Length: 336
Picture: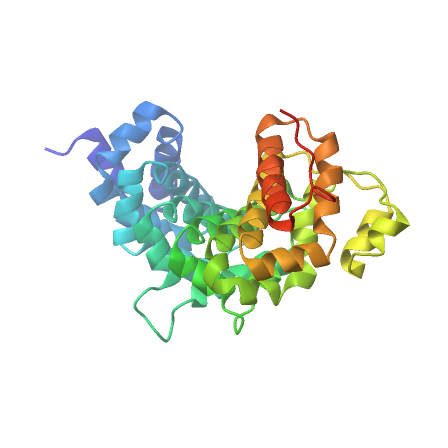
């Protein structure tokens, strides 16, 4: 005999629109509580197929279905089942056909699914040579074309997807491929008004810099965009002197000639400092950093830093600069 929950799942496939709507609303409501999520998770095998089919329906059923799937995907065991049943392919197929609010929810679903290794592999389309990277290219294009100034920004969470996939070597290699130019596009969002976008960019750059030993040339190819994205968040908000700015490229000197809004998120500041550190561990990266007067920016930024973890990241970088230059000039003076 079917349980109440099994009967509820059955109604998700009802030919009656009213019954389907009532059933999906109940499922949506259940995913809002831990007990409800647990009960639904225990029936994931029979729940996920009809619930996912509703994503292609009218907004009155697709929206609560999408919210329910996002909530369910926070449980790793359920997320794994979603990946196995092809949820990433379905989400990518519907993503660009849906209205903004549904697209936003589908992106959030992809964020949760790419926290799994299998989810990242599925999004990267690993194993399919002709299609490999196509999904990521589409997501990057939408991330960069949509604007955070719009009332609805359905693709701002793409930054979190990029952070997830760049935790894997295959993802980093894809983003750093100069022929695709993906990282160059992503970096341009570093000064977005959206905190989510900025955090996604800084985390993605930082992860990509783990490949600095083998991919330094590709990183430095986009230095015109890379150095502002890495240095401006830790430059403080002071106006730099003409003498300091004369040793910098235009994209840095012009930004540092005016007062700026400080980057309030300490995680972003720590991530860009870690990225700079990984670049400057390489001899050519260190030379490139000195060539843009990077050490002076680090010195000025450090003077106003108050967060202990960020200060530690400044000091780690400063120690590297001091040891590599053989002098403490233009580097951080750290006190014991």
